[in-house]
View 1 (cartoon, rainbow, N blue to C red):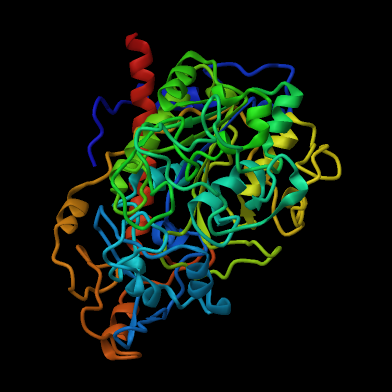
View 2: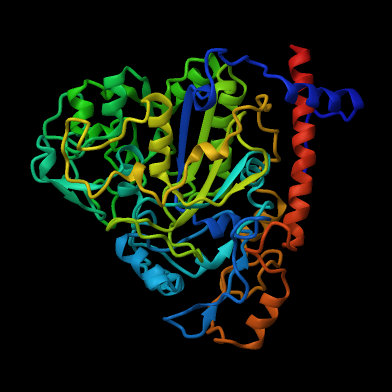
Length: 546
């Protein structure tokens, strides 16, 4: 790992400790507790399970020993393995696939579902998948940025997708706590649960500029008639923005399995940008709050972030297969750096998550809290000057927890509640009040001095990832071996010597933090610790040079 612009000296290392002891941008003296957070940023990446990214992270609830998931197509089973590839395939991830992957809590449907995915369909379609790389896991070698953030700030190892299914309902839950279809969108009472395809429009004609109900002057009624968080924020005078990254759309606007790539803008149909299809956003004349991500970077650097921001990527930077893991990290790093090196750092909480599991293996059965979820486990990270350093949060959480945190911070605990918000939709429950879900405020220490910005971690996509990216598919590799690629071109034995040997060759995971973990994971954390110190020293030197 190379750190550019760093000179090791006692003075520079000492400066890091001075920087950590006091804020670079003093917080308001009038704020205490959660209200020290004046800006909440939710960054929503795509399609990764917790075990696929953090299944070997020390102290986390990671991949248990002896796992071998049945291969319903070719017989035998496939064990988890280290996958150094930068590009993955994943598996199908619609509602029915979530149910099949979970298999009544056995968590053993992943390989069979991936192999059944239609090989000819568009890769981002939730019905698609291919191969058996759903059993692969990455670690700090492929994920230096994310593992670095986890080590410096907070990793959440029981963050669950709020729903069973794919990106559209997941993003709807992210902004509203529900996913539904409405017979008459102007009448919230006519809405009902829908975790498959809540949008009712088909593709607009070529050149129409997007879904006809998403335009400034809509030619069709917006689809989503229930209450979303922006309705409460607008009523309370709390600023918000939803930032969309220009590029390509993740999916076909009609839900078709095959279509030509279409551009993504602030008026893109709802897959990752649902707010333009909410009746409340139209009625409150808030469509202008959906803006390109370039505006987020400008606001972050200028210190003019709104109170609440959501940021979504485009296809390239999303990590949604076939997007590169390294491209996603580069995108997230730019967003976080824009905040960290701007005037709002000392009053900001950044919540980073992945919208669904993408068909990748995870071993934890999701809790059932209503008929809609929870969905499978995804990675969750908290980045903030008040985040508890190196903390692994084991609370049960979902994207509803983001809503609760925002409501507690800016709305005095007012909820999206049909009994109190004046828009009586028939949602099954008020998710923010569910007793199963934890409280994100536990991830913060508001009495500590604000921590310095994140260290300058190594660039993702290093030598190991590049070597494996072009490796020949179809080779059976031992879990944790360098350059491992998806196996299962031949049937794996149900309990044969190869599986037993390769599982025994690596330390067990999912044990308490005091237990022995994967040695490479500990090496990675040690290196990242040095990187954090060196990165902080480099930041101090850069400030002095200005």
